[in-house]
Length: 173
View 1 (spheres, rainbow, N blue to C red):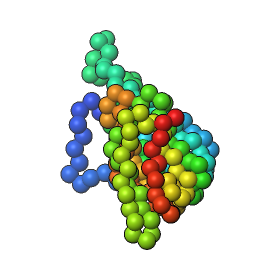
View 2 (cartoon, rainbow, N blue to C red):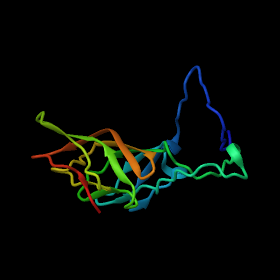
View 3 (tube, helix red, strand yellow):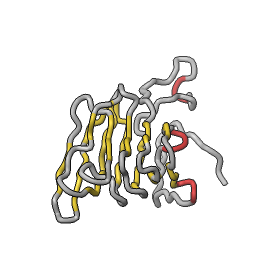
């Protein structure tokens, strides 16, 4: 067993990294404010049909002048990725930012009859709403969301399974 370890330089692996074990998936069964320490890099199983899952505020802070580049307590969270898998069909499920951070990127929504459409967030969109129908969120839907810049989350590698005439899942709070 290895304790939590922080490296100050790049880590190279010639054979890759294998993440296994029960700590790699987390079931979200109630409204949850996500944290980097507990949720980033794990598969988040959404098991609350009307859950509200709030992403952490993006922090782009630099190392302190006192601690320098070895400040392992720096709260900078650029690059943190949150991977969602809809395990319980959505009825009114939201993935939200703090209201200041906004979404960039795209979501592909698809219906099992072959209909599909890509949706791009407007400048002020800070909520993704899934309803298990036109806005997607059927079991098997996936979303990956990464902090990329001050006030910007990138939505990528995402597919929302939907029904009927699909509409954008992006909205303003």
